[in-house]
Image 1 (cartoon, rainbow, N blue to C red):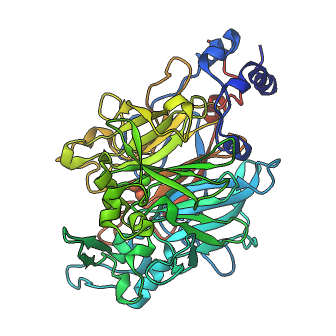
Image 2: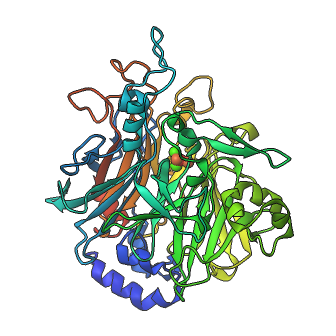
Length: 559
Ligand code: FEO
Ligand code: CA
Ligand code: CA
């Protein structure tokens, strides 16, 4: 019998739509979700699903983007490419997402890409490892180059004959940089201003139910330093690694926020209500009454998991920020008014939000092993959180945490927690980072073993070789197994997995190839193999039979 997607969807509609938890905005933008449950799939369909086979790629140290059988890729854009007459694509692409301009045409839309960090050797020729003439401090010109290459890019792309191409100089194409003015979505100013200079450290992100981009500021202290407080509540400034503060006057308190970007005009705002910390990501869910729930992890050893629940429709300002007590399954409100312990320490709610890490500890939040990406299972509504690792606590390989909100209510104040999958040799992965569910509910995952630990004989990461992309199939004989489907070039990590609305393309970033390079004339990677031999962070489109079969877009052969 021939597989017919239209009939399958019709079947699903009749059988199960009413009973499932589906993030409606994700369906409309096509990122994820087809509403199905194993037990609700007709026997005949299930028989065919059993025959999905994914070939596990052996770990490799090859300096290339190596793909398993049934996948192919082409490059969409890379660092330094011109996107308009004024702008070029930034460095170290992380979160990558696509919103179609017209929801009826999945092949034409806007790509948002975060530019998380810069490798100063490549971006501005700053070389602290040059033994003859080590540079101690960046010049203003070097800092300006770095500030231009962080932030994010909006680029219009179109698929023509199966190949995604940039629409050069499209009016939507623009850069958000370390200097773009960005408003604070808050009623009081922070360090005297309500519009701050730029964004940086943009790691992972998300989209809103109203189809704007979300970009999260993670390791901002590397660019702007940090304010630390001692037991007497006395503040000390800790300088940054990159030394931007030598040339520009911006306090650390202007960074570490969740940023929202309007795709149409590039205007941006920072959402103070969601707290300030090393935001890895922010994953939003729209409740039936249009209030919003936003989950976010603080990617640092022993930091916390947060959720914001808005009190008004479509608001990322009015509402309550909670932090997770995963021991007792409770969301603890970071609310100055109702928490005496916060009133004793901080002068107002704004200070609680700026110093969210300290406030969380006062409330008894549970320290976690570097919470990174968060995705909501489109079929069960469970929340999956990657915990990358926590080396001082001897957790080298991390895990995937699963949270089940009480009664499946995303605004619940209690939850159940369990480990979905542990990293390590038994499961074939280490240091889980980004997650993405495809249209059929298969879970895709990237790994981030740090460059200084990867493929090093004295470290426990040798068996895993280069960072990779994995899939955990939902159906078939390999259901629940972690299968390696792509391996990254030398020193790189694969980031920002995001499916096109038709489910046929997986957009993926190849971040920091050649990151351990000490001599620019002899880089550790040459990916994407340009004539100049310089490694470049690159966004690719992965396509092929395997993706189409896993998304039920193609007939699955009977065995
Ligand atoms: Fe930017 Fe936590 O990875
Ligand atoms: Ca990450
Ligand atoms: Ca990372």
